[in-house]
Image (cartoon, rainbow, N blue to C red):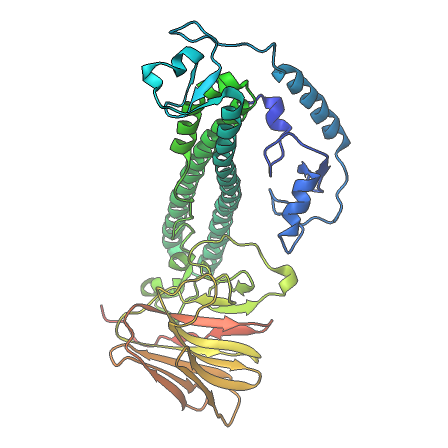
Length: 474
């Protein structure tokens, strides 16, 4: 017996957390409603009291009851109870012997009569009364169903995060376009054509990546709908009479097993707008047309790697940490650091020599260096990076697990010069103001490395620009 899809009324009266009809519904200031117990259990596992759907902070620890919704749900539950109330018990007959089906063959997993039990077909088989068999197999189906319910709950949370990522891509595109227009507004009229070309490239990427995210969200929605339909159909079969349940048991188990996902959806790497490509070294890239003083920065920060505690300047040349009360919620894309207040340079290096200067700006806890491309961005990092680290008034040369050396400096550092020589496998730090060597790492870098910047207060780190005085050779 097939289960009809949920009505619009049932969907409107379903809690977004447990997907059941609301029980004691409460309403948040953002207008989203949840079962009181579901919301309390959700908040118990979260550091902040925020809406499980839109992530907006709740101003109340005990949100008020949604009395109107409660009355509607109670009426709906009464209506569904009357609708699903079983009629008089019906007893199916054996198709071979026209006897009542009273037993369930555990070997063949089918209903049988007493004549079937004594036949050759079921010789030496094990049988159970219908009610006992139904209880045993309902328990198995409920266990399988619970895994699907957990998976659907996981998918629902992933969809919320992906919806936010799609919105963030649009914001990125808008902010980046605004910065491009400001930059081009500083140059002469003859550069307007170049400006439009870059904006077109940005919009093209934004459209492609937004379309990609939309396709993934739609595919996830389809899979969630299939899971939801299977769950609702199975739940209805569990409420049916034992005979009908056992007749459809094999199909129910097969349907659950076929739909059980094996891999959780993940946000792909490179899903966000490559802001650094559009904004980084913008004036340098149009230098051949300007023929004037060009400001060039050897390292451009990549906002897609920056942790949520950091704020990058529009030109991606400086970074400062934000007050923890004003932390911005950013997409959890694979490139972003989740555990450290860290941001990387947009370009990695595998060979050659590279130099850049960093203005410290009086920070009390910072580090500057390089990190390997394969190092994970989530959780603690135990190796794979080399840095000059300042904390608690001490300078350290730090590269766990083997190097942790305290350095003695005559004067506090204001500007640091970083020199990376991949041909000689050497990373050096020096005082840019006095041209005094501080420390050098010698290590066989075996993969691409990226400039690393870390800070834990409200001050600022800034990458110093270079003055270009000679024409580059092509």
